[in-house]
Amino acid sequence: GAGVSQSPSNKVTEKGKDVELRCDPISGHTALYWYRQSLGQGLEFLIYFQGNSAPDKSGLPSDRFSAERTGGSVSTLTIQRTQQEDSAVYLCASSHNRAGMDTQYFGPGTRLTVL
Amino acid sequence: QKEVEQNSGPLSVPEGAIASLNCTYSDRGSQSFFWYRQYSGKSPELIMFIYSNGDKEDGRFTAQLNKASQYVSLLIRDSQPSDSATYLCAVNRGGSQGNLIFGKGTKLSVKP
Figure 1: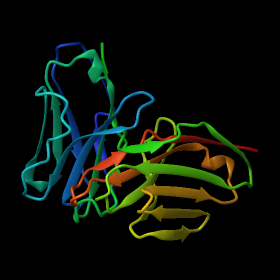
Figure 2: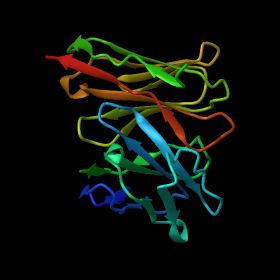
Figure 3: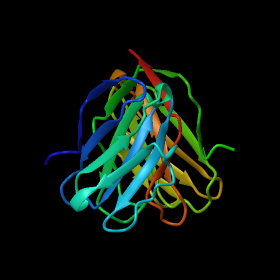
């Protein structure tokens, strides 16, 4: 079946602009995660959605970052007033349920470049 | 202390040899452990997961977990040039929280 999809694949924006990144999880997966990976760095957790529960936002680096998940499926990560340090690959992953126990499947990522 | 630590490498092994990748973690409450492979410019893909102490084998790959030592490893037998990639160790947070904590990865190079 179809895997996790993300759009756009690449995004170049100017400092101070807002951007929206989209993630479409695998059908039937109730858990959705956002990570970011800066050049040469490991994956940094941002936010986690599980079913209808309140999201775990503990990894969001500042209040410029927010995310929502509509209808328990598609998620949008929004970065307001982008800064150059926001440049990274933003990865979305989804899993069945059982928090922390189920395999997370990653999408291809969105490469964000802030000029 | 970093939550998940890996030797950044690069680890270079000849084709056909065994590659040994190691990872230590700090949260004693962690319950699940994953190894992901990431080719340059690509997203991570799952290689193996392990929940219980001991060894778990899948083809050329063996994951080893020692919760007492807070140590997890990945062995790749008969290494191939196509195994050349960065290997990420990931550990869930204790208390069954959903997100994974990733190490920075070990870059493996398999020389023909």
